[in-house]
Length: 232
Image (tube, rainbow, N blue to C red):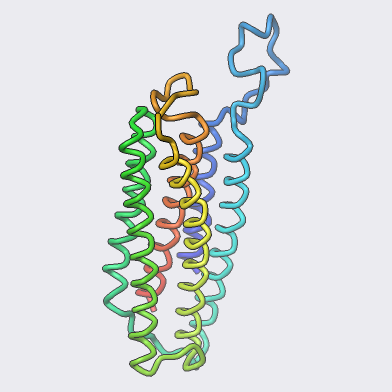
């Protein structure tokens, strides 16, 4: 239960910090004087896509928090049998960390207007994410080969459920990442339509940033899930 509460607290803190950076607490209607004296008040400084992602992450975070709460409550019942955590999960964790770092690298490259760096980061992030999913399937296979199936015990049921839900969220992210990567690779001339992004258009920069934020969220969730499984 403590880990699930910690998950909610961490997600809430991250959300509050991120929203504070987006000037959502500003009250431009209380300002006096010409509009030109107050930059970023003509329109919302936060793109709708960012707000949409923030709402989705809040919902997804709540879902994982509920699953974590159910996990710890179920552990207290007498029929719970600890599940041997496959050692492959450690390798998978390293692969997911590499994927998140690659997306962060693409995000930094987009801010600096380095389209080649964006392509490299997106491609590396996608490949390593697929590697993580493949590793999770291998972990499932190792468990089933050892006689641990979905219905073997509540602990194994939760293992398959938690990893499946996390994997489905990652698959959804890969769809968005694939569209962003295709958009980047289609740009042949690298012409700019952004004010400070060099060869990276504003739309591409935003898409890369959203992918990176989502990947960091999935990494955080997975680290909490791994801690829960090891606590078993």
